[in-house]
Length: 99
Image (cartoon, rainbow, N blue to C red; front, side):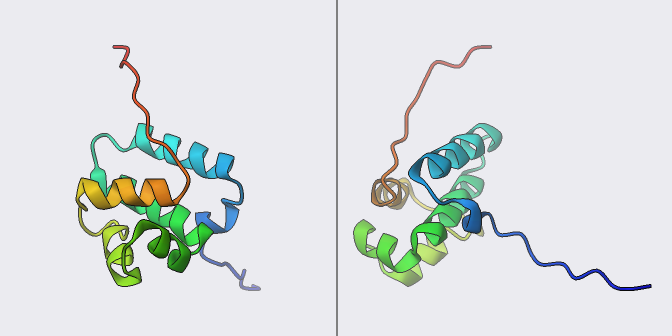
């Protein structure tokens, strides 16, 4: 039987426009259930799509600290998250939860 070649799926390869990036972040915020590391990982996916070096410069962070903050391995502080969101050209918003 012939083996099927597979490749790892990378969402960053499919985030091409600001609208796609915003929709992805919105979906991740809805699915996170309070998991800040999950949201940080989603921001990391978007940052990779835009280019980590550029996002790090725009956020005023080192590339290394940006990778650590957005790896999903730990929960980053809120200040770096706000800097990254701004550097990505995105906005966070809130709305009333409907129970």
